[in-house]
Length: 207
Image (cartoon, rainbow, N blue to C red; front, side, top):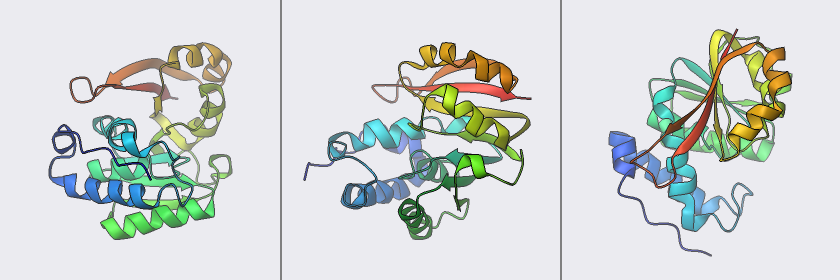
């Protein structure tokens, strides 16, 4: 098994007094992630920087009740629930083995601000009630917008963690952006000065 990446010096700065919970979650993911099909075998040497901190630096962008579509290993949902105990997180995930993992982590870490919702985003039946929706490494924007926008209340936001090709994704998703009446579509970069590779976040208002 590969060696887990040493904790970066910026981790306690990003998580503050919640750093111990972040350490426990990272260790659990390192020990069980590959075996349970949550992360690939090459991820341990970059677990902190590529996954944990990449998710955590977006924490200041959220408020209210947030859905994490395709929560999977808990990236970003569990990480954000650790970083922002004042926000309520709904971890939306269809695969049973992943929902079991998510619930284990919520219970183990005592995250009273998070809950697991088993199901696909397209089967959501609670209406447009969330203040915002996030997702990370789920699918291209043209596929993601129809999955996420219907969950968000009027005036709420999509806050999606994306990669370097996000500008191309926006170009390819113009039809979906118009269809779901998204406005103020922009890319923000978060984590500069804290992580070597800052996180690109697509933000858009849903109306």
